[in-house]
Each structure stands twice: as C-alpha cells, then as structure tokens.
Image (cartoon, rainbow, N blue to C red):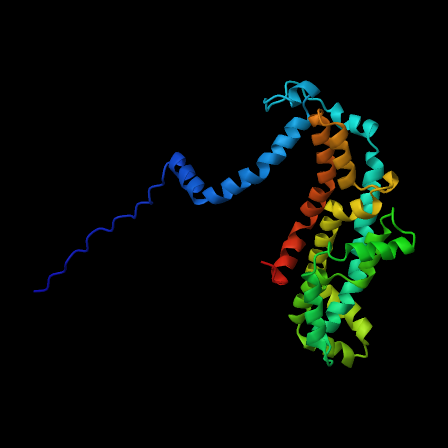
Length: 293
C-alpha cells in the first residue's frame, strides 16, 4: 500500500512592513546630514544678503533678519547713485576678451605639449608648471613699468593683452585632458590628408569641449572677481573701473546704507550665477576629466 503525503498549503509572502513616514524622513536627514549642513552654510550668507537688500535704511542697521517692507526700489536706486552700467561693461570687456585670448593662445600650446614629440618637451612643460608657482606680486613692479612705457596704464589692456601669451594653469589643465585622447584619432586624420591645424580644429577640439569649457569658466570667473589687477592698472581712471573696484568704492561711500550695498552685491553676483547654472554640467564634466580634485 502506498501513501501520499499532502503538501502543506503555501502561505503567501507578506509585504515588508514600511517604516512610518516620519521615521523615513529622520533616516533621510541622518543620511544626508553633512550635505544639509554644508548647504545651509553656503546658502545662509546668500539669503542674508538677499533679505538685507530688500530692507530700508534703518532696518538694515538693526539685528532684524526679516524685512518689514519689501523695498524692490533699492535695485533701481543703485543705478542712480553709481555708474553700475559702466562697471558692468568694463567687467564684461575684461572677462570676455581675456577668456577668448586665453583660449586662442593656450589650446595650441597644450596640444603641442600633449601630442608632439620634440626634444625638451618635458622641460617646456616643467617651465609651464613653474610659472604657476610664481606669485604675481613678485613681478608686479617691472611689468607695471613696461606697460607704463607703452602708455597703457589707467586702462584694462595690461590685464587683457597678456592673455595672448597663454595662461599656465589653463595650459596645464588642457594638456592633462588632451593626453587622454587616443593618438589613433589624430593619426587617422593625418592619413586622410589633414594637417596639424585642421586636425586640431576638426578632430581634437570637438572631443576636448568639456575641458575647454572648464578652463574658460575658470578664467571668466577669475576675471569677473579680480580686484588686484584692476586696482593696480585702472585704479586711477574711474571710467575703467570694474565691478570689484566699484563695489569697494560704493561700500566706502554708502557704509551706513547696507541695503544698497547688498543690492549692488546681488547684481554683481547674478551674471556669474546664471553662467554657472547653464554651464554647470559641462563644467563639472571638464573638471572631472582634467583631474582637478
């Protein structure tokens, strides 16, 4: 006689119990505590500047943080009390021309150091890195005397024209990226009849777009925020002042009107924030690929 054992009935698996929403929120906050703290530290001063810019003169001198009335007219008053448009124009002229000249002069040098094989290539690259270690204040006096002989002091051209000779930091970053591009691409272009210039323009530059964007933004931000250079060369001519010089003078004149000073600061920061907002993806990619830590 054979007997068959009945299988025990299968019990449906119960779904895992979900944690309460409040506990899940606490877990999320604990997991991102460091990022939240850094965000608060970064955004706190910006929020303080924005709130102060919308206060009136009397409340800006108090310890109150929230405006009683929203004085949007403070941004219009700045243009009446200071030549802000002239400062913005000079800053744009300095930043854009210096960035364009830097790219035109630095990209070929970085390409030569990365792809050409010639005697003294490592020594040339070492000299480029060495110039990065030289503080600009060390050579400020002799360079100023040179530009004074050309009667260019009092303008921004002593800060723009040297970019035609390249920038050591930009050459270093571009070279580090171009080294990672396989030589097979340039060799294939030469087989098709392209010279070195056409190979650089048609093949290398499209592939190096993230690195180019990164060094361009570095240079643009540096020029936009530069204070030492414009003070040294254009400090005696009010018509050639940049935003950094103008804001320093504006703060000295309106030292009791912190609302106007903060409003001018917001207008000075706004273009940089907008540029970075639209270019942050390619900028971060370029910084990551060029090896900047």
